[in-house]
Image (cartoon, rainbow, N blue to C red; front, top):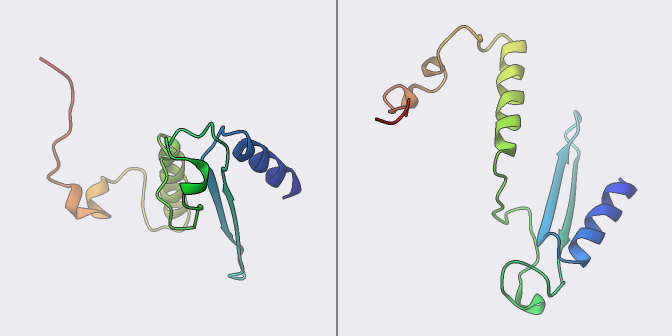
Length: 107
């Protein structure tokens, strides 16, 4: 954890990140929460460092394509537990997506 803390502190200090939140729960239900906030004038928000709110566990953040990895992990955990199969459609687990239109290309 010390290396992670040093890395995020350095990135927040020089403005490479606006902030970060790490939330972990172990198998016993114990929680670890670690937050980092940037006070660097180099931040991309355009706000002065002293006007930026500190990062909290509820701060909205962009995770971009990182959600693909999280989704894959969750799906495979469901497969492991016998709750889903890779051979079934998604509609069984999420019926609300059954009628969504899917872009398959352009004319």
